Amino acid sequence: MTTKPPITVVWLKRDLRLHDNEAIYNALKANKPTLLLYCFEPLLMNDPHYSERHWNFIKESIVDLNKELEAYNSKILTVQCDIIAAINQLQTLYSISEIYSHQETGILVTFERDKNFKRYCKNNLITWHENINNGVQRGLKNRDNWNELVDAFYAVEPLKFTPKNNQLLTIEAIKDLETLFKIPNLNAQQFTPFQKGGRTTGKRYLSTFFEERHRDYMLHISKPELARTSCSRISPYIAWGNLSVREVYHQAYHLKETSKHKKALEAFMSRLRWQTHFIQKFEMEHTMEEASLNKGFHKLKKSISKDYQQAWKTGQTGYPMVDACMRCLNETGYLNFRMRALVVSFFTHNLWQPWQEATTHLSQMFLDFEPGIHFPQLQMQAGETGINMLRIYNPVKNSLEHDPNATFIKKWVPELEKLDTPFAHQPYLMTEMEQQFYGFNLGKDYPKPIVDLETTRKKAGDTLWTLRKDKTVLEESKRILRKHTRNKRLSKS
Ligand SMILES: Cc1cc2nc3c(=O)[nH]c(=O)nc-3n(C[C@H](O)[C@H](O)[C@H](O)COP(=O)(O)OP(=O)(O)OC[C@H]3O[C@@H](n4cnc5c(N)ncnc54)[C@H](O)[C@@H]3O)c2cc1C
Image 1 (cartoon, protein in one colour):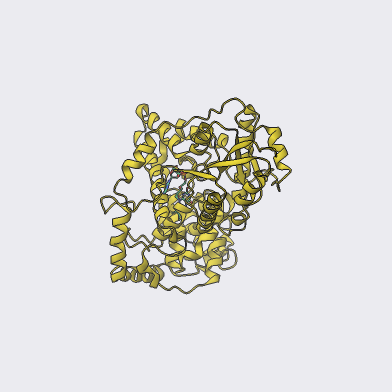
Image 2 (cartoon, protein in one colour; image 1 turned 90 degrees about the vertical axis):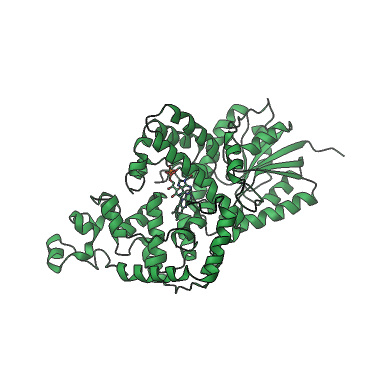
């Protein structure tokens, strides 16, 4: 009987980088021949939270990694099957006793998949080493020591990628393995309007932000058009792991020492920490994917209107800022924070739709879809946490304040291009005569508002404020504060 050669496998997921990748670093330390594996898993490819733009980004990331790996005569084995099928197939040629990956704070299907995989590993005498991802801690009951744990994680120098000679499986060996699998085509769609995946591009975004763009970070962060260049735009690179939060944090920290724009860099660094904070919350409360964390809000019943939802998804609500945001998001995969909050607020408050009905459209559209931020943010913006300020964004006030010349609105809602600025913000204020003057027909060229802002805002505000006094909501709020904050009254909860 011939013995199979032993290999160590690194299962890459949302950590598509070689540098500061703890799974790869630990696997290489084990000193065995190492295979880097990525699975396009049918369970995720068929999941409604994901869309083509995500798979494209991942493909671009893998192609970029493969270029980097050429120097080591290696590449990523990229297969289209679930992880158990992949390991079973690999075991026909190699002996695998150790697998490395990061702890994934994912959606329910990946949680279930990980439980199955753990069982599989146990039954097959494989040790599955999972490392902390971006500082998020597993198994915490509360946040008492969380700051210290995260500080300690961030304090470590980013890990270097230094495989020994020939430690990575060679391109030839991987090509042999490919014959055993269904191999996805890595040719991503070309010339898309989305940010291109891969560490090389991610590093470019980061360096232009640090060199120049961060100067007006705080001034422009809420402005839908200007934020596109003054914010870092690194979120998809962090969400898919092309960049680690720690390496970005370290670079910002060093730059801050000599920078004239310390405040901007501090604000940026605190947002990097929010990233970890929100994912930590989701890690400790995975049921947030389907129901509000504050159980008191489960009794809130909203009637579903597919017509409203369709108008919102397609940017046809009759409110130019809401519509511009949605069309821009659909087209480019990106919106700044305030405008993300605004579209969710409009959906959950003015249209009075359950936040759960917004999840898949938004997750499919956001190129940076990160479950650990997505679900907690949706609930927060819907006013269903019981512990945060209730914010009902007024789309008109926000457009006047953050897009005063209606530049963003006219770009994304070209039907309003020929109107003077005040009417581009509020086309429904035009009289018949003004419409004739501009050659514009409200209701035909652009929809009339589908709801009245003031009455819907009042109804939502009254209902939610009343509910906040409910006994279960109050008890739950206390529980949430005890579990998810240290001083029990943190503002960013
Ligand atoms: C409803 C809603 C859904 C969201 N969904 C996501 C998501 O799926 N993925 C995602 O990365 N962000 C999400 N955010 C947070 C935020 O809007 C984006 O991180 C940010 O706009 C990305 O742009 P940037 O990289 O230029 O950010 P920058 O302002 O340059 O910030 C740098 C990094 O800090 C982190 N960050 C910034 N703001 C926040 C925040 N409020 N909460 C947590 N982390 C933050 C991100 O990793 C970001 O890349 C969501 C916000 C809302 C209101």
